[in-house]
Length: 270
Image (tube, rainbow, N blue to C red; front, side, top):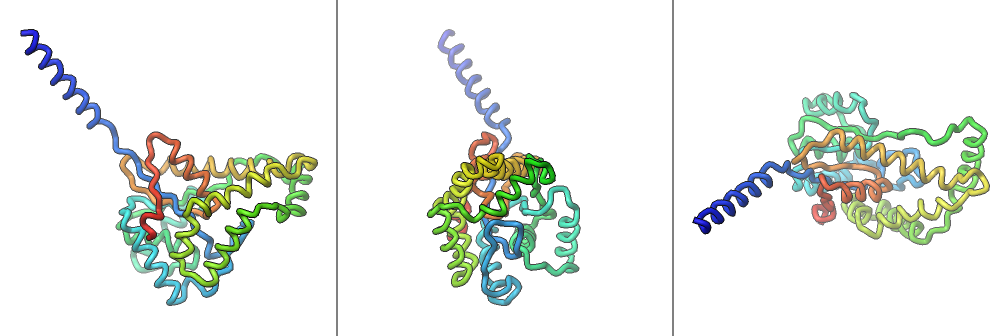
């Protein structure tokens, strides 16, 4: 009797455990793909590409990248465009209907094409500048801005300098795939992120202008990650296409979140 009771209890416990595990929602898989901007933005370093993204040669390279990323079978593609702006979803619907010609930007060339290749009905803009930590028109803000304008290029960081040189070389002589492989490597991500660590200690005499700028950058990425969380759901397979400078922070946010699984894009860019 005792043996039978114990056996029944053990079976019930196993069944309860299996049921509890089955009830757990599947974790969301998130791939952060750091890219270089095809079109100049308000960045520290803008691209030096040879040839338009719309040329036949570059279009073939874009198709190759999209095909590789599509092997991940993303259910959602998130792009670096203003969060909540309906323009991009409207354009995407027109694109699927054959009524919109894609401009040169990477959100269109990578984002729209990957979403369409994956059979997605929507694209998701998730970019924002976040809350401003200082008023540029205030006395403090004016001193910070003046320092940034005068000293932004004074950072002495051999890792970042080497990373920029390598990126420039690939933009001049390599393919888009070559560049994406490099930009998403651990070495390239670290080289970009190290710049902020150096700049953080600069401008202490100008209201801590360096740390103000770096804090604003971190704030922006916090808000971007919040936007990401707002559009993804359990079980999604998500590709986030962002300027490579964002990758370090967004990747760490994903890795730290127990509800998410980080997916390394380099496995799909081989």
